[in-house]
Amino acid sequence: MRPVPLAEAAVQLGISEAAVRHYVNHGVLQAYKSDDGQWLVYRLGEMDPGENSSCHFGPTGDLIETLEEHIACLERELADLKAELCRRDRIIASLTSHHGHAKHPIPRT
Image (cartoon, rainbow, N blue to C red; front, side, top):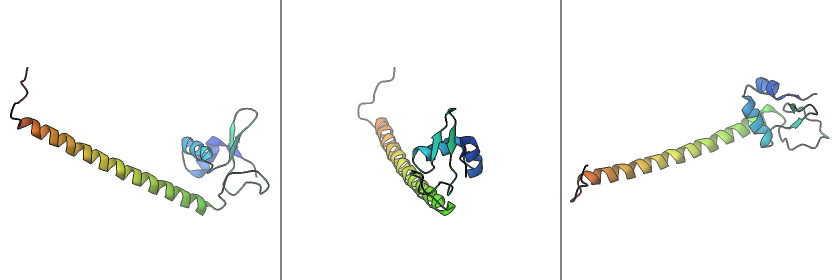
């Protein structure tokens, strides 16, 4: 069991290097910086039981569950942002429709 370079971990997991960094930063994957400055990532389920680790994954199913939760969170955030855009569009439409029917129109120069 040896850790693999970050780029290799990305290929093995089928995700981008940025995603691997994200998971390392959030404790999803365990990694360390070697003496030569290279980030090495432990693959899921390959941590030594005695190692001090914040990685809580063993089987890939746990990773899938966590990713599904993350996706659900992002979908909720997207829905909230879409609702906010619709609200702003209604405000803009209301303001622009009232402008054309004003008692004292704004003179055009």
